[in-house]
Structure formats: structure tokens, C-alpha cells
Length: 381
Image (cartoon, rainbow, N blue to C red):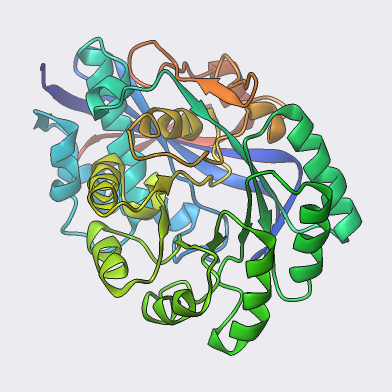
């Protein structure tokens, strides 16, 4: 395959607003800043990635502003004016910076995109994926009452979503799940706790076993794999790890300790596509199914997710819901749409999605160009 030579990187910071508030145990999100990373090859091709950060360090330690700082001061200088034979090299090239996985993923995914375009291939083919369409699930934030939740679930079940994920927290858990299961006894249903519980809640959490859940996601501390192994030994409901898995090594240790039966692979959380592939392959070897969770991405991040989930061990519907469920207008020219519970994987080169320059300009806070390892230039709007 043809290598790429990174001529320039442009960081576009935008402000996006959700169509409606999204509530988890961390809090409620209505708007967020996102950095869209544009990597430009010497041939003039652009590849795109995005920071899937929030404005506050609640999901992990990163924010959009910290990601921008790490990108400008450390990551881009390591890559600018470099020839890259294959994007799988980039993860190791950036390993000198500890953590900051979302910042790393933003630039690494953009490189995968431009590399695929340079070689006239869809990203999924370069990744080793084969599926032409992927099943879609829907994530529902914490609602004001069980009745409101049942109404939301009803809407999404009738729209055709193949998995329903319900955010839970103490005080909004057992009764909410019970009401949904009574109304929909046969749907693929899971709960996501976002680290809201501790081992002191074992007896309480064990009540979920009676509702035939597909899984409970990250019930305990965000950095734990040991206590989860204790909890998994007490529950029949499969535990899925999310926030605890930042790398291949985290996944390996969690599997060996029996801390989970399922893993959620988020490209941003693990530092990019190459590490996602490694975790996918590890889980496949240990008969641990994987799926792709959402981070309220724009169409850029959603497109990367779609291509990644064409890999064979993504056997559980992910959270890549259509653009219209989150944004009044997406940042890409054609919305991601669902038909009968599936989304077609874009067939064009790279991620198969084109940025809407008009939508970008409308939401733009600033653009900054990096053309060498010592200069960052604001681009006049």
C-alpha cells in the first residue's frame, strides 16, 4: 500500500448542541465542544478524526481543552512532516505520552482515514472487516420516571433498534428495569451504570438477575477490574466493562481475573483503531463478545465506529444510532440513517463521509493549523 506523508494538521474546534438533554450518572449534557482533526497528506487528501471528549473530566480525565493541548504540544509534533507506511504504526509512535487516549485516537483515526483514501479503499477493508451493514442499538439517558422510560423504549423498539441500553443510577434502577421488562419481555435489554455502585450494593444489584438482561455495563468503579470479578461471581447477569478498559493490557487482565463476560470497545477510550483491533482479537480468542459504545459523536466519529464494527467479533449491536437522534444537523454532508435496525457501512474510500464545510463554519469556534513541530497558526474565520 502507498504510504502517506503528513503535510499539515488542522484542528477545528466547534460547538455542537444535542436535540435534547442526555442524562447519565455523571450528569446531563446539552452542548459540548468537539475538536475535529483534519490530517492533510502531501497529495492534498484530508482525513478526519474527532475528540470524543466532554467539556468536563467526568467520563475520564480528559476534556476537549486538554486534548487540544496534548495534540498541539506533544502528539502532532511527533507526526508532522513524517512518512507513515501504515496507520497501525501510529499507536506505538505516540506511546511516549501516557494515557490521553482520546487525544491520541483523534489524530490516529484521521490518519487511518487519509491512508485509506490514498489507497482507494474503504476503511473497513483496511481494518480487516467484512460486514456490509451493522446492527444498531439505542442508548437512553436516565428518565424522570419509569413510565417516561417505558414510553421512550416503546418509541425506539418500534423504530427497529435491535438493542436497548438504559442508563441507571441508585434510585433509578430496579423499578425502571422492571417496568421496561414487563412491557417488553423479549427485547435485547441492558443496563449501563457508569460506575454508580460499589460492592456494598451486591444484594441490590443481584435483583437485576431476574430480568434477563443482556448485560450490566460498568456497575463499579471506573478504574476497577478486581471488584468486578467479585461481583461477576455473585451475579448471573453478564458484566460488561467500559471505563476500566483503556488498553489491550487492561482487557487481558480483566479477562484473566474473570472481571467481565463482555467488553465495550470505544475507539477514543482505548487510544485509536489499532488498539481497538488488538482488543477485539484478544476477546475473540477468549470467546468474549464485544460491541461499540457511543460517545455522542458527530458523523465523523460515528463513521469510524461503523467501519470498526465490521470486524467479526462485534456480535452485539452497538450504540451508533442515526444522526437525527442526536443532532438537528450533522457535521457531514449525508446523515447516517438506519433501515430496519441496520446501518449500511459507507462504501466510499476512507470513512466514506464528507465533511460539510458550511456546517463546520456555522459551528466553528476556531481553526488552528500545525505545519511543523514548532508552529501553531490560528486560521482567520
